[in-house]
Amino acid sequence: MEKFSQLPYFLSPASGQADRIASLTTYFIIAALFVLAVVIGLLIYVSVRFRAKPGDGEPKQFTGNKVVEGFMIGVPTLLVAVFMYLTIDTMANVMPAPAGNQRPDVVITGHRYWWEASYPGTKAIVANEIHLPVGRKLLVHINAADVIHDWWVPQLGAKMDAIPGRTNYVWTTIQKPGVYEGACSEFCGAQHAWMRIKVVAQPEAEFRKWVAQKEQDATTQLSASAQAGAAFFSHQPCGSCHRIRGTAANGNVGPDLTHFGSRKIMLAGLLENNPENLRKWLTEPQHVKPGALMPRFGYPKDSITVLVDYLTALK
Image 1 (spheres, rainbow, N blue to C red):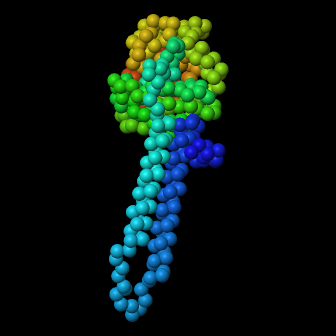
Image 2 (spheres, rainbow, N blue to C red):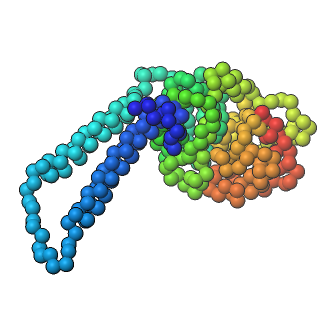
Image 3 (cartoon, rainbow, N blue to C red):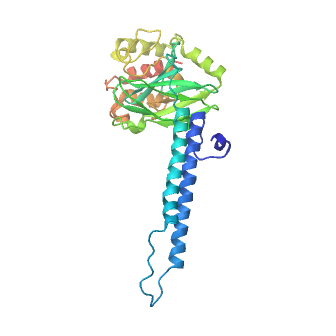
């Protein structure tokens, strides 16, 4: 079934698991087109061959044709049996049981309305921009902190529900580096449509280097304005929701901000991560992303400025 991975293909599978799903989908499409062609062909043939002519009476009626009955029962039964086998075989290969107590390679947690990724055995925790290595089979644990979400990056394989209090899992073997995008596919609230997913697939060495960098504490080399922002941040309730490793901020309600300045996007893909957008977010969060848990604090402009300088310096 993997032969379709070698062809230009509109589904563009990028993992072994997605390739099997895409191949199965292709077989379904081919079979459906064949049945459609046969039905339309017979309809046209019968309409032309047996069309009524002026003066024709009641046509001769035929019943009990065992050849036709056998064809109409046998062909659908054969198709159902073949596709049942192909579907079960695909499911067994795409979603094999986790190997006992095997430690997952990454744990994905859905929040309203963003994604958190932690890497067991390391200190690395990131939000929304999730990095994964290529070329090896990864066990991904999926769960949720609040309501039901659904993890789905179509090019990487099956989608999976993220359910509070329950851990689900998917396997993925990413075949080539690149950026793969997906979205939450379970309606989870007002900002469901803006709960995007971005997976950055990297060669193993590059991925390990990225993890090592993400394990580091927040930078201490700050400009005077950024230092003022750090002091402001520490005296406000920001740290009760957000964590910045290496500081007293240790909240777990909002995204980990330890390396916030190194991210290319913010708010789960809603905005590019730049000072202007960050200023808008800190000033009117409910205007930018209504329904998100971030409250409006009404800080003065100069406080917003030093906060922006501080957060963008966290790389």
